[in-house]
Length: 70
Image 1: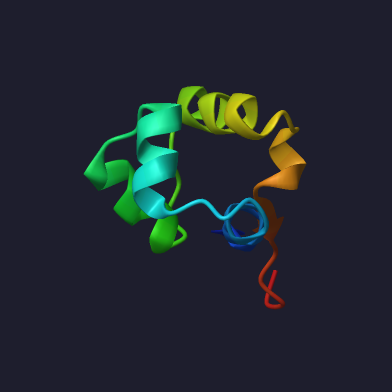
Image 2: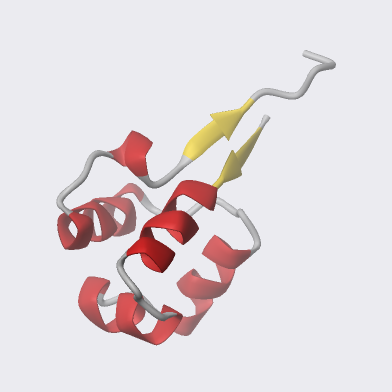
């Protein structure tokens, strides 16, 4: 299984938000922003800060995708 932040990317586009805007608003580092771009796991604390920025739930910014082999 793996993580997808495609929903977050769509939210950013819909809100005309750049990566630098998200980093500032959610107080995330360059390293964490890169992990998001690579669909790598980030801390739940960071996810909660991003949800606070968009006034949404975790499922609105990310999803877990199960591999077909499992």
